[in-house]
Image (cartoon, rainbow, N blue to C red; front, side, top):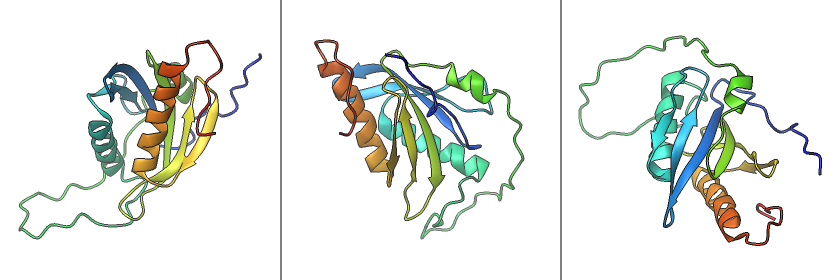
Length: 161
């Protein structure tokens, strides 16, 4: 079967290639890449991955969050102004990165209602699905990795069918 790569694109300044490298029970770990540095950002579980990606989006100030961080205690944090970042890796270089057990292209288009909305592409299955929350995105990744681990007879994996 000839595979088309029409869904394999970054398409946004905050596009991330998420590489899942290991599974420890129900925990998935790996790295993610973005255009602004060559070395990967590692994560030990999907919770840590979401926090690190949120920090990256905050540093980029894209997409702009729909809600501000709330805090009821005085903050002594200095104001950090937005600094323009320069892309170091091209989209083509990013798309060459692959995880040991799974690879996803994550494009967060909005950060509204204290969550993320966007598209995720599972590169191995060449399928793209829209997600409406961080939780839904995490469940899609876990579902894909469950499908891969339970596929014993070499059938093409299905995702969110």
